[in-house]
Length: 149
Image (cartoon, rainbow, N blue to C red):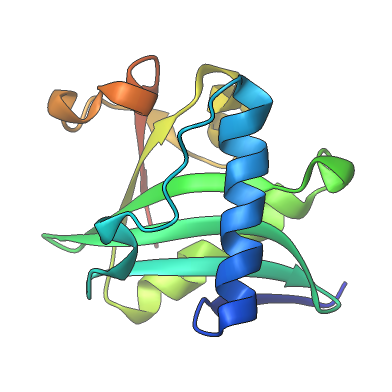
């Protein structure tokens, strides 16, 4: 397929990025307090990314550099009409490649309970890496890590 993991820069990319996240991660879960202007989106060490398939935005992820050659994978979403079609695996692989370009050798994630099986299939291991992260939206998440080779 023709995938591209794009850094979110243009106004259209920001619009698509926020629409997917709000639709998949907030509204589909009965939440309506999504904040497009959250300051974490614009920190120099955070990388908002948009997965495109043949030019169509179908997924999002943000990779946050946190030091010690580690990065946190945050707010992963795939458009509802294309879920369970392998796009999440492609997003994961492209995110790992992107992380390596920044010297990241270990990825961390707060996985939603229904995503733990997916992450385990992708080589992630359950590993409590920062209990203080498990608040708010992440309060029911399972922390996992993956070493990049």
